[in-house]
Length: 417
Image (cartoon, rainbow, N blue to C red; front, side, top):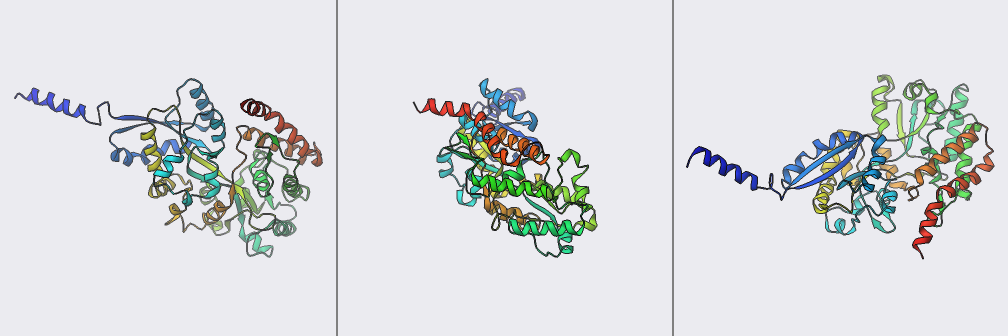
């Protein structure tokens, strides 16, 4: 047999294998931001384990991701697998765009009871599981423990009354400074405080606003009182030159933010202040409080023709060892309790997040929620700046929410006929 004949036979044999033949399935996976940059590296071992699957990973900037996903849905060009922010899941559920995953999870090694319950709940819409949590996010307190010690406190606050007493003591220590910073262009702190009440923010299955309810009124009164007492400055984050420098200079002692700030404070605060700050769960009305269940999940689109292959990617990314590696690469917090064993469990700054994640609640599961939250921000900012009466704010918020939910009510009424 000639050398050329041997070469052609060998080439034909290679081409018939799963790496090159038609049996190799292509899974299109869209991921956003930093996650889209690192997931290729994270999934290299997956591709070695699954030679019959070829991953086509596309990274999207967060600023364009939502519009691109909606355009892809309208044009029948959605990916097979996608990273979705937890607040986006209700919107794509309303479009009937996502594949229910209940039966797949039940048959796989993905134990629901290993996940933080509030995070898992963000993926359940009308009784169907539409995503598997990939990483988690929430909001809690970053605080200057040296400033608290100077004010006479050795531990962070556990409830609202104690928190107010601490802030007053911090303010009394230096009346020209503030105790807490609550940027007026961020709605998350007020939403987190509002979730600590039993009453939902929307009523009748998300058809109407419930801001006139007693729960939101109390949370709003607590929030606004911090500005009235001069404990928080009436400013947005564009009016603060550098939040890390201001925190380091002691211009405020408390800051509500998310897990990405751990790395920022480690990098941006000088060495002599690295022992001066710490994290703590959010205080609630009568004890440790609830916070926002945030983060991103992995969802499979109904229109995918390779759902089984896409699910294998979800299973791989849900492994505890994969989640630990993902945390090392990005700093994102894992959604499974078992994934916190090891280095992350020993991180003194992450411990408060681990504690808080056992007490998180989903925001209302309606596609319009983020727009409603923006209206919360706009109305409360006007109240803080004196352009709007505090007593009128809940009524105005209900009016704005009801207007945004009008189409939802019409669709639900039509579906019930």
